[in-house]
Length: 404
Image 1 (cartoon, rainbow, N blue to C red):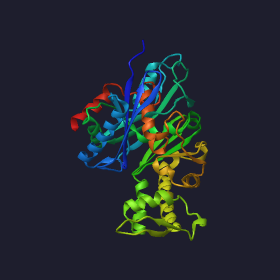
Image 2 (cartoon, rainbow, N blue to C red; image 1 turned 90 degrees about the vertical axis):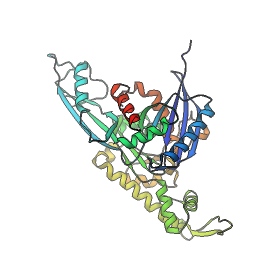
Image 3 (spheres, rainbow, N blue to C red; image 1 turned 60 degrees about the horizontal axis):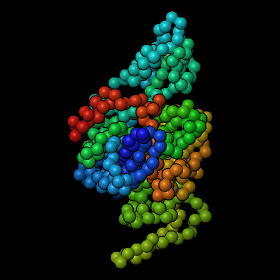
Image 4 (cartoon, helix red, strand yellow; image 1 turned 60 degrees about the vertical axis):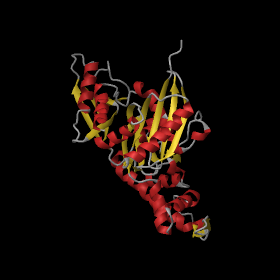
């Protein structure tokens, strides 16, 4: 007799749109059975600024997804982005206590607890503890060090944390639809895992997710997330630049960006004129293609440079052999992979959607939501992201509920 399937909801509350996917998981297979989408309201750079508007648009997307699936979502994995999210690295070491120097579970538990024990400032909450590989007497151990022999055991964690109130706001939006938020998941981890392969993550790869209001990135080394970050700049900033520079409405600027924007200035386009369709009040207008490219190229280069600078010494071409993978809606900007290759000094390409995904979801803008479903299915068996299905994590979620 087959077990009852679980219906998982993946929710991404973005600056430009709310995306909800419903996955049916049988314990062996995952099928996407529902999709809902709605333009965002009350969200700026991944942050809820108008609860009522954000709730209405999110609930509309959730209703669409459940109607499409014909099932009620049982638990939600909610993507997190925003400039309030930060990360730090902390490591610890212990001397192996056994007389024969054989490492046991107590040694592993002790060193992990020590590495995760750094206190956060008041008003901050942990979103992820991401474990890096263990070291035994300085030697990298990619799997569990249990039963290995050594004198010194070391481990480090990259800890992602955010403002408690902002996390509570996001949870409260979902809770208003009478749904359980099982986990908060960093957007870059969701999209990054979706567009990179195990081999790329082992060799070192940087995944950059350029959304409408934010750019999220994750650097993988030795098969695991090494460093993450968020830049509060995205595709809407290119639109705003065009709007100001060419004296257009945001809607008109968005159309120009999508049709004629480029991440670099193409000399062949100099002298070319392009048309923007008008309306009954304002007729069609003509613009130099070169001027559009100058504006979009300047902002794109600046954005990628900011990511490079924020990574600091964590990134180097030598430790990022698999290069850069770009995803998110703004990754569709013409020429952006070529520009990324110049900024980071490694090969760059656009992330691909897995072949099992339906045609209507085969777009970079859905990679985060797709990655959330993958995360939801694999969270319990994931050995890298610390298991938070314990009293501490659930206690944090309940505490956030109490604050909303």
